[in-house]
Image (cartoon, rainbow, N blue to C red; front, side, top):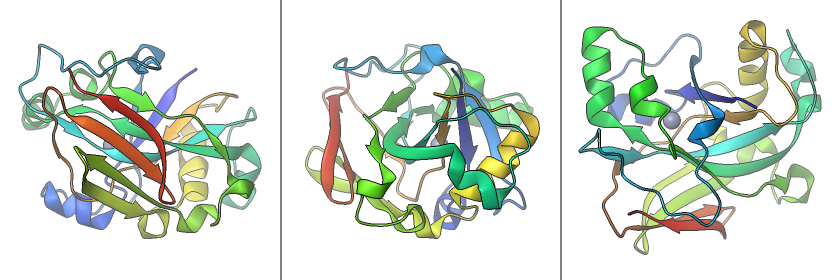
Length: 204
Ligand code: ZN
């Protein structure tokens, strides 16, 4: 199982980190060891002093596919959930400055917190109009809607499947809306899909 992630897929988030709006999806990956185990807290890793939360819609791939056209991409998933793409922003800034890859900042153990998954047809909205938000200690810090993606889910699947064969169970993190910020010990993170709290955990 692999985790494919998209960066800068919401214009306001690209702007808040002083990144240009990309002309094609920004792609990176996390290994399966990045998955935060269920019922476990997120531990801030020792190699960072500035870990940020990035709430993202996560799409679960349900068929094998390569070179998928975007008009057929909807046949390759039927469930979505929410995740946090934890990012060691200080480490990432250093990698970016030196032109190095991002794995130390993005792919460390526990850096992919993932909720349970929901059938899209059981949601109130289609995949192109799903609202979601993240509360920390009871206050909303990030809220987004898939309608504001620069590259919608089907386009992302078409793009990434040009490079990587998609397999059943693979996860696609689809990018974060604006409002990223640091997490601190004892924070409580609560993730809401269409106003329903579907996942929560603490930071340690
Ligand atoms: Zn992200």
